[in-house]
Length: 281
Image 1 (cartoon, one colour):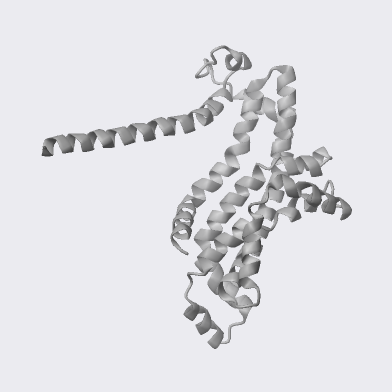
Image 2 (cartoon, rainbow, N blue to C red):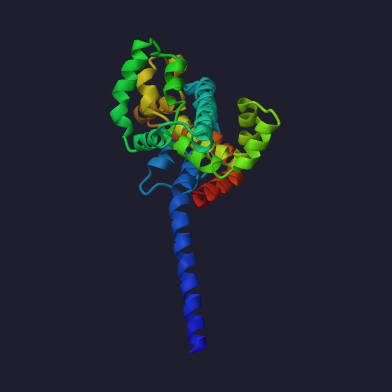
C-alpha cells in the first residue's frame, strides 16, 4: 500500500512537471522563433512550413533595418515618453498612496473606492474625452500630449496604498516628533521602504508605455515624434509590400530589448513586490 502511494505521488509529480514544461515551451516558442526569424532570409520565413533555423545567419538584417527605419530616433522618442511616464506615475501613485494609507481626512474611503471603480472603466470609453481635452489644450503632436494623460494610475495608487499601509505608524510618528516635515517623511521614509512596490509598478508602467500604440497613433502626426510601435507599424507596411519579413522580425527583436534589460535588472524587486503586495491587506 505504501509503495502504491509512493508510486502515485511520483506519477503526480511527473505529470505536474510535464504540464509545466509543455506550458513553458508554448510560452517561449513564439519568442524564440521571432529571434530565430530575425536572422533568416525572407524566403526562409515565408516557406511552408517555415524554417526552424537559418541556413546561414543573416546578421546584415539589422544593418539593413537601420537603413530603412530611423531606429535611433524612434528609441529616443520612446525613451523620453516612457521614462517621463514612469517617473510621473511613480510620483503621483506613491504620493496618493501615502495620503490614503496614513492620513485621515473626510471622504477618504469614498474617494479611494471611487478611484478603484475607475479601474473597471475600459480604456476605450475614456479615449475620446481625453483626446478632446488634449486637442483643446493644443497638445496634439507633442511630447506633453503623449505623456501627461498617462502620469496617473488607479492601479498604481491601489498598489502603493496597500504597501504603505503596512508601514508602522510609530515610525512616522517618531519622525514627526523629531521635527521632520511631511515632505521629508515622504522622501526619507516612505520612498526607501516601498522600493519593491515602486519597482513592480515601474516595470508594469514601463512595459505598458513602451508598447503603447493606439494613443500615440491618435496624438502624433509628425514622423519625428514617432515611437517604436508606430515605427514598427510603418515597417510592417513596408515589409509587406517589399516582402522583407526578416526586417520586420529584426525590428521586433530590437523593440523588446529595453523591456528585457529592465526586467533582468529589476526581477528581484519585481517578484518581491508582487509577493509582499499580495500578502498585505
